[in-house]
Image: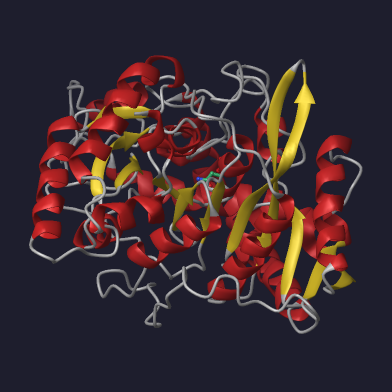
Length: 488
Ligand code: GLN
């Protein structure tokens, strides 16, 4: 069994297609692993065993008939933000803990069309608001490298599931770092595509101008393959880009590093970075240099405003998006004496502390008298942040930064201090504000309190340049030779 669960995504699909293993055996192995480990890791909110077995059997049938598809038989964990038809979808919130969607999100539908298998729905911070998975109504997910630590957030369950070999790949959403940060904390690869690359239709909305779906896996090649299967234009999402999808997993090794211009933004190499993290980033930079890449010091001068700008824009959009949870159409309802009282009781009981904080700050910054000073100002600063990237991408092909200032922190350490928690997003939020693609790839491990913990390096690319971004990530991966924890 341990051999099966250690297989990568691409490898699994190939073995299934060649009938060396069956989709049913692989799915069973994953389900057994979840059964044995989920109590301690808490990566899955819902395990869809019956559905998974049914989908795996259908995969094996297709293989027999010679109709195998791109992701045939590959079992995936899906962040519980994606609506899955007839399968509970909670957004890790009490207000949605009885919600069974009557429809499927476009991104997951794309994956099922390619033959992938739904294993279950993974844990996250409530409505994807958080950086540690601790705001989940279903309890925090834990980091398989050290279960006293967070796997990151908000897509913590998706990252922990892949890092703990419960599945070869999973989906997350990234509004301000929620794919890249958990990937870094969990020692795996996670990519946030360009805004518009993947459809948002059927994903529980957090901050619509920032939200983007993306893949997690244990290698760049697997992330590339999953990305290819999930992305594409969707008329149901008006912000979805009508651009061709490339064969991202092919040609990953074709990059000529010689002459590749890598930007190192001076604002991202500050004193706040843990020296052990910094050491790994320095090695990554030196590796590229040794292969002939050109390292260019660049400046993204508005970086210091990224976290405050994000924490105005994202809550403002969230406050609007979350107004739909009123107890009337779906989810929790607590009846009150009249309509207003029902709203109040439902929302008071249904949302957790962090979500309430976002709704309150969001409504505050949108209210008349404060709108110009906060929301409008933030939109203007967002434009400056975006322009910073436009300017530097004239000079460089890709940007390299740490993904996070530290390795995974301890569960409980930051949850009572929202500002410290928000500051953890310092290297990831600007990418979302600018709508650019970013990827986190393991850079190495450090030792802390006698535990080995992974560290990630982030690459940021030009809009819709995922092909090159993945090639750069792959080049780094080969040079870094990161040691994944073993499944045993
Ligand atoms: N940590 C950020 C927040 O709490 C980002 C979350 C996300 O990307 N979904 O908003």
